[in-house]
Image 1 (tube, rainbow, N blue to C red):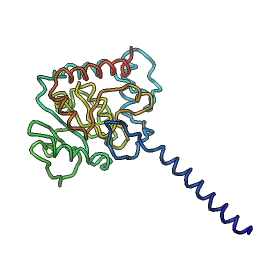
Image 2 (image 1 turned 60 degrees about the vertical axis):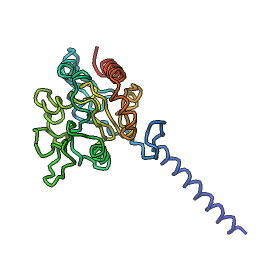
Image 3 (image 1 turned 90 degrees about the vertical axis):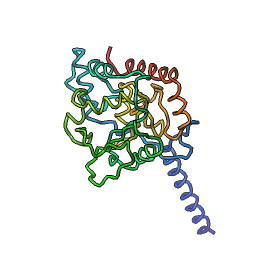
Image 4 (image 1 turned 120 degrees about the vertical axis):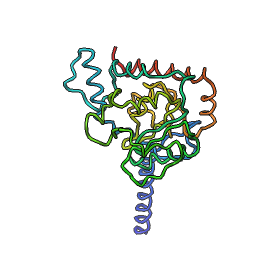
Length: 269
């Protein structure tokens, strides 16, 4: 009889441990929003927030304001950018009616490929001859996705994976094709990469274009930034993308709100 109860106790203990583990794992899954992907996928915990580019940009922002920048961390709760840098991009930004491209993506597809494959699928389905797609990886055997794919033109773009300041802090004038193309585009694909957030998201906001992401969880780097409520579009909701694309007033409203939020939160007063 005692053996029977012992076996039952062990069995119940296993069930309790299993349920506890399941509950822990479950917290790592994203909450599905009404307009987010319908199938559950792992919520990417934005714990990897250290990025040297953020440190370089914050240093420039603090230096510009005459503030101490000797001990800036790359894991700031809120990314900071210099007024000068933002203004340089604002000067080459283009109004809706003058943007000649609908979509663009310039980046390395091989940078954590599972998070970026949706970009290729989206491009093949929705890019046209005026769109721009550039895979910046070193793959000489890259197969073109279509007449919009300019990957083999080698536009002198420096990839983020190169550990230099030039790669982590992109000077606007030294990356003319990259930023000019983004400013000419109404929408920019912003996949997560080697981190579960996208630096391109910040750049898209400064270029006054609208980011397209796979999930809301790729629109923020920290819990503080999660509260900013930026306008973005989901890659799986092309009906909404098309609606915004064909409504200049709505598009401009989204851009104006994003610009206001960016200047409020990411620039020093």
